[in-house]
Image (cartoon, rainbow, N blue to C red; front, side, top):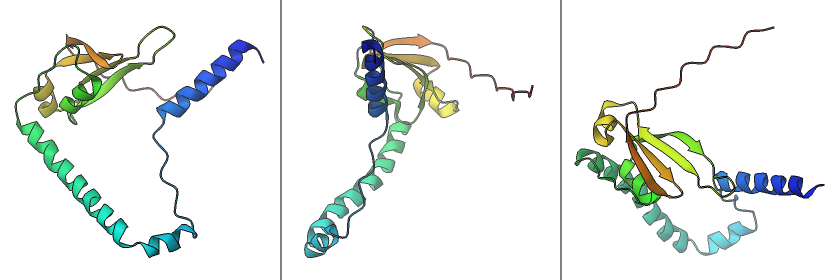
Length: 151
């Protein structure tokens, strides 16, 4: 195998491993069940905070939507920008990082009156982990694809 093929294969495997969601936790084995039965108090206390946490998240999201539109500043971290988007943004463009370049993502408001009012009719370019540019206007939706013909 040539060195460039090995490098391409390693890069593809690495990209595939990093771009997927984490694997679900493995199911408990029969050997692990006696240990769980021996300590029933510990899992019960761990489950109660976990059950309370998801109920707090949906309550927090509508409160953000009722407030004033969030302010965006060039240079904000991607995590901060995504938090300010809430559930009103959709990613329209993604260009993965190549050799010597940064990845680029372009987000815009969802096709919803509430989201457009909240975020404005503009595009948000995130490059290399920070907000790089805010551009007025929206990317038009893709035209519907025609069914391929036989022959």
